[in-house]
Amino acid sequence: MHDNRALSRFELTEQGLTAYADYRRGPQGLVIAHVYAPPPLRGTGAADRLMHAVAEQARAEGVRIVPLCGYAGAWLRRSPAHRDLIA
Image 1 (tube, rainbow, N blue to C red):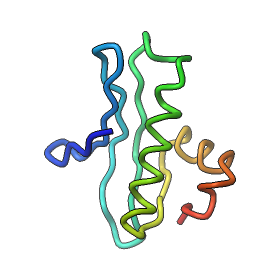
Image 2: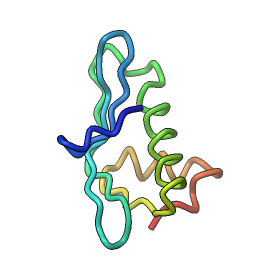
Image 3: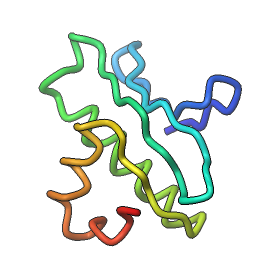
Image 4: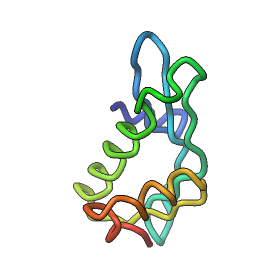
């Protein structure tokens, strides 16, 4: 995963395509506004791998995640190892 700070998004490139999670850093933590995977990557687990990397990044930074995106929120709630990161 790559933190593209210029575009405020975390990126994961697979098969020459980029899945990403738009974010902003706020007082409550890392706000995930949108998670996107290009159609050819959908169903391959790319968004899951991206969110896993985002959660690990948040943990490394000692911040929590504010999931505005439905996918990000559902992913965090389904992940016992990362549920504690929800702000």
